[in-house]
Length: 278
Length: 301
View 1 (spheres, one colour):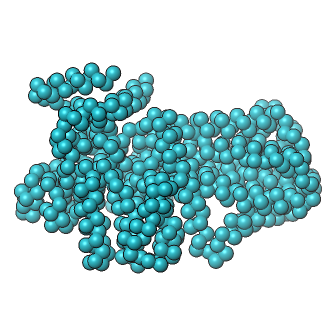
View 2 (cartoon, one colour; view 1 turned 90 degrees about the horizontal axis):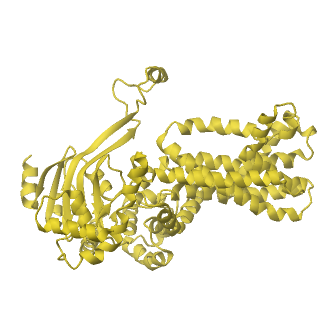
View 3 (cartoon, helix red, strand yellow; view 1 turned 90 degrees about the vertical axis):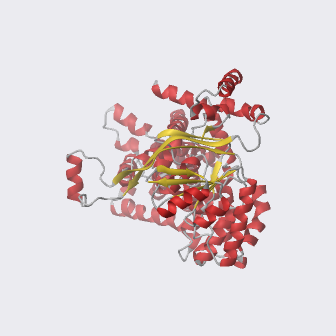
């Protein structure tokens, strides 16, 4: 019974969603309307194979744990995001900063709707997309096949793929190597092709995780320009980066995450100053 | 229904009443980033992703053998070698062949048909758990993964079937009109496999130990499915319900159906049709429904 009501409540919001865009747009000025609302979000995910000091992974110990009903020892729950709330508006470019492991990437994945919330919710307008198709590509395959596979994985149609194919090859600058398996590429070439594929699609809400602008200096410049273009065409951009200059340059708002909670939020200069002092 | 409600919310917002974020989201028509779509919407999304599913399946097949020297030839060699090993074991060493006419054809048909289902079950169980990074990076109906894995197995089955038909001809069975029914039984088995693959995908996603357990389960299933022996011959002395259970086993049903067509040249009995059809429909509905119910949770692992 409880499951049934839960299901209904999840299905219900779909009906208004189809009608509201027409009714809302005239009332809202271009910048004001919220595109992403994060409401008291908690994310917990499971990590396998992470054994603590007391739980060495030998069979005798494992048997003892089963006998004592202690559950799976190699599984740990990570509470990565603990109660984050904010509202992002149309036209915002929001930088997310924080130490390693502060939950930045997890937060991005939750906004993209890829990680289910443990508690709370993320509401979005349109489909936020993470910039990155690396996981769909197979290194044994040629660049050619990977471009096609990656484009389909991002949800393109065959005609879109045909249209974008040459552009992707050109942008990546890998030339004839496109006919070789990706396992033969240098790391720079691989990164260039991956970036070229993942940036081939336009998005309403764009989520950019750090370490995208890789490759040599020339390609770095090219990819930064491409990101700028994508930011202009997208309604809202989230940017995770360790390079604070990039954040200061491109964002109009910064969220500082610390151990899964928002430590500070607001104007880039103020937040970055405080972050640098900490 | 939404119109009056949003008007009300608008009025409240205008009055500057404190508004929860959830209400704000509703007022602006935002929806939950992660929500399970309704079944028809889900099927539509899946249909939209058909190119991805096909390309993914083909790509996996291509990359699977790309490191070996003989390359794609292994797609044919693997089923041939499998058949040879089983024939050596059960035909020559254990001497099963004296009881059954044309034992090589009998055995190889059983092995090929069973392998199709067995491999789908095993790979289906891994389809979600070994693709967590993909699930955490991109949006698509998650059923695309077990479906792609099943289609990958179907592509491999194509080669196995060619080998099978060739071997059946070599062992002296005549070509018959009944062979036209082969696609029909394969289709029924495919539908059964799709459903089972989905079911296993959810099991495997949340029960990691499934992958360790599965080889034993499928091997038991193999021995119970009459691949190496004729079920009706071996079950003469068993109680009725046990015999009935063994023959109702979906793997056994598909194997017997195929043997009827390929070796015995007889139109399968109505009982066989009912069993094969029942399992296909049952597995598809249950498997798909079961998988879809957890759609929004697969990313958590």
